[in-house]
Length: 174
Ligand SMILES: [Zn+2]
Ligand SMILES: [Zn+2]
Image 1 (cartoon, rainbow, N blue to C red):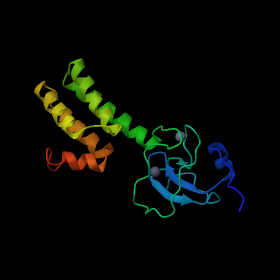
Image 2: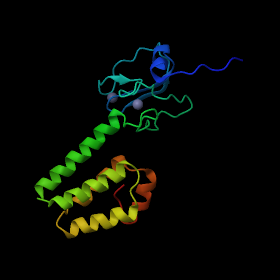
Image 3: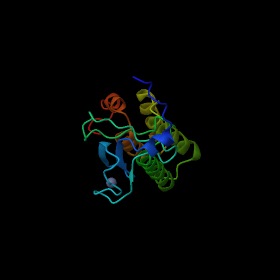
Image 4: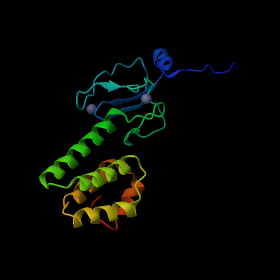
């Protein structure tokens, strides 16, 4: 059997191999879709359907064995950038945090600390104990709404492990 040819990300798309199909807002339409199957727009929300990373054009890795209801990956394994659905969630979370900061007139260090916690959650490097301590510190300094805002970030963007570790400190949150 001859060696498999090396396939560059851009070429793989031209060769039109099966890929996953996910709409720009994150609806997973297929874990593995034949390229001949026309699916340009999401039947759920009408957004364009992606079959490759918009940053580097690497095809969305398919997995024919995967169950449909498992959410699709967050970041591109070829270039490391968040896929659009993840990037949109992160942008929304940052906006919400900025709104809380404005409404409650947080001092700059408070907003910076809350934003740092958010970044750590998104990058999956947040220590649960540091989040608990950080939220206590924020609440003690008048940033009351930081706690629900950050817990919402954990709910939407945090890992299952992080949720599990935080559950005893924030019962009923996720
Ligand atoms: Zn959609
Ligand atoms: Zn990429």
